[in-house]
Length: 119
Image (cartoon, rainbow, N blue to C red; front, side, top):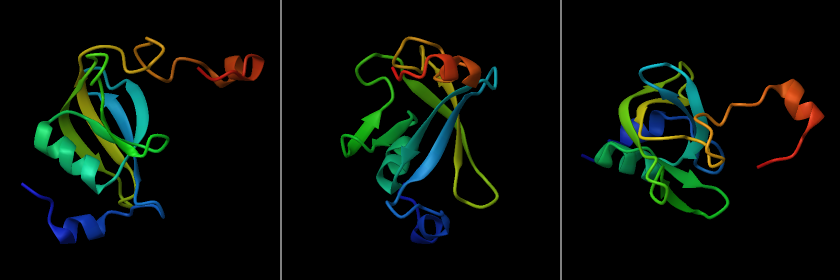
């Protein structure tokens, strides 16, 4: 079922038509990752029940796990008080991070300061 226009207009999209989406394990409440959604990826997520995001670098939709198999089944979606951030509660089928780590948030900032490379 398509999102109503009034709902889409109430979401506080940024200047590029995106909203940050924090992904959290619904069972453990561990934060797994952060990605961006646009209206199309939000609709695809609602339609499929699988977390789907907008790739800023590739300029296309991507469903989490489409190549790795590490999909994220959506349990619930919560929007913050300002309407400018989504919290996606999921049941993950594997690691969230492209490095193979369970969460993309596996390094302390102190560790990052010592070794500031990106993966």
